[in-house]
Image (cartoon, rainbow, N blue to C red):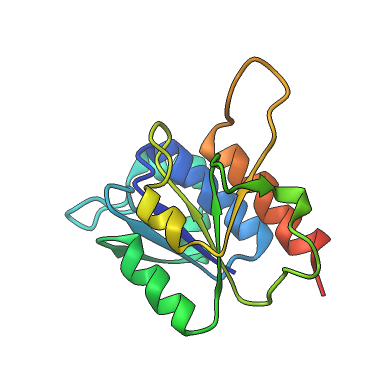
Length: 159
């Protein structure tokens, strides 16, 4: 599984996603737009990132990219199923992503903590998955949402 983070702005959220990605065996994370990387612009390790990721930035492959759209187009051509995590009129509850729609090559796309994913990215997604909310809050922290969805995809839908 590949992960694409588009405009995820919090260094703590991205570090947490790296740690969870390591635990889930994610192959690679693509950091797009303003998404912070484990290294600053001078190539130095970001202490805040390392504190949250606990070294996962060394065990999970990663790459910085300008935009997720180009990656999504590339991965679709390579046969990946593009799954966006977002609340949308087209979204389905993540747990309803069934065996008939599963795919062995998946790219999971998550976005900005406030704005989410752009309509252009959602249009390119093969499926949009959401986590239904029962309380007063309308959404979860992006790192928490990633953890819920990635483990569901990797273990409940394991072929």
